[in-house]
Amino acid sequence: GEVATMMDVPITKVISVCMSLGIMVTMNQRLDAETLTIVADEFGYEIKFITTDIEEAKEVVADREEDLVFRAPIVTVMGHVDHGKTSLLDYIRKENVIAGESGGITQHIGAYGVTLDNGQKIAFLDTPGHEAFTAMRARGAQVTDIAIIVIAADDDIMPQTKEAINHAQAAGVPIIFAINKVDKPNANPEKIKERLAGMNLLVEDWGGKIQSHDISAKKGTGVKELLEKVLLEAELLDLKANPEKAAVGTVVEAFLDKGRGYISTVLVQGGTLRLGDYVLAGKHHGKIKAMHDERGHNIKEAGPSTPISILGLDGAPTAGDKFSVYADEKEAKQIAAKRTQLMREQSVRTQRHITLAEIGRRIALGQFKELNIILKGDVDGSVEALSDSFSKLSTEEIQINIIHKGVGAITESDVLLASASDAIIIGFNVRPSASARQLADKEEIDIRNYSIIYDAIDDLKDAMEGMLSPEM
Ligand code: GDP
Image 1 (cartoon, rainbow, N blue to C red):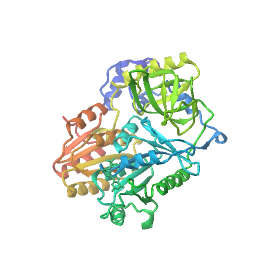
Image 2: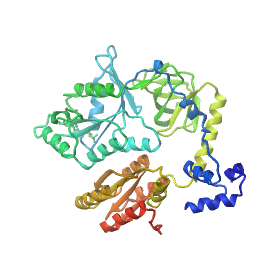
Image 3: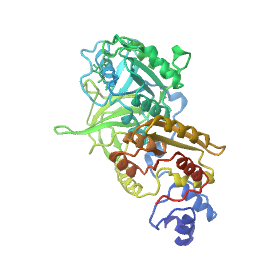
Image 4: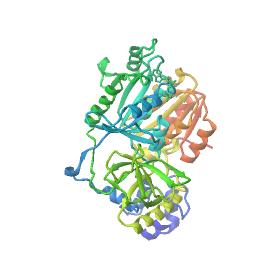
């Protein structure tokens, strides 16, 4: 309706253009940016997008090169269950005591920082696992710079090890392998490296580029060297931030403390956060009344890559929400209100993620270059066969990426990855779990189930040619 008025054309004409694109709309519906562009073009208009989100507009202001300084890497620990993620995080938490500090880290605030002997810092996200990592990404937050993937040397590359690798790769986050439990008599780190090589993941010992280190999270052997490798990787990444501006960053966790009110742990990613700053985080806002670090100390300011728990917001934002600081309380409140409204509207917006039926249209428009697929099947043989066949369907116009494949039911973690990477999920003789189904409905992820290999291949082919008949 609004866009029709702006272009001074009848609403029915706009609706019929949308219908010709295969989109059924009502006059009050919001269109996505891509559809808007095409619709406007039909009537000879060009759309220029400006952001209604003042905060986003603010972030767009690029930092000047001379204001940028090195910032510490932010690390997530992932890996298969029982391979030692928690033990590694615990060991680092306990052992890395800043010179002159009595006692280690006492508070669990969702993230913590450590300082090594040479004064260099690393920030760890204290919720291990790729689910938390990808859930944040699905909300649009990329916080992690480096992923440590823990693999038990007395075990093997397990399904969740593969998942963790795929999730990190889909996010473009470099991996360092921590081959753990080398204190065990039956530990065989070489076998793990060989298995990794078999997956085309060559670690340095094997002539590759991926760093790895043998450790015992229980005894602490090799952990220091592992952290040095993290810093080396960070150096290559050339991580920088401007500490001199109003703070921006991401919420890591938040909860209501009965006595003290809402407590949120945030990770500062740019600028410096100060006591008394007026903060907007997701839909919530407030003036910072107190700030604490992971040692329970009162803190007055926190620079880039510093995790800090803050008191003073009027509610609990969600993990993955961005936060920023406002000079003006009134402005922050206005944006909070506008955001609440936008979120409500977005929940009725059409088509947030790619669907098989949409592919042909998007390819025809020429803006769609890569199709991400997550493939789950009942047996390895069919997963591999499908994965090969799908990859071969890549054309000059469109590249098909199998960002994750595996044996087993479609899980919530698969749906989160699809949401974070805008992928479709294809199941072969497997179905989504009830919770995965629910999440897929909410995130609007297309899940297709097949039991005949050729049907799956034919559907994808048809979809790429825009010939797929809609699923009933
Ligand atoms: P997570 O599920 O990946 O977080 O694994 P945990 O850290 O909970 O470890 C699972 C089990 O392995 C626990 O019983 C740990 O004590 C044990 N474990 C972890 N790291 C080591 C290690 O380096 N050596 C030995 N021997 N046991 C370990």
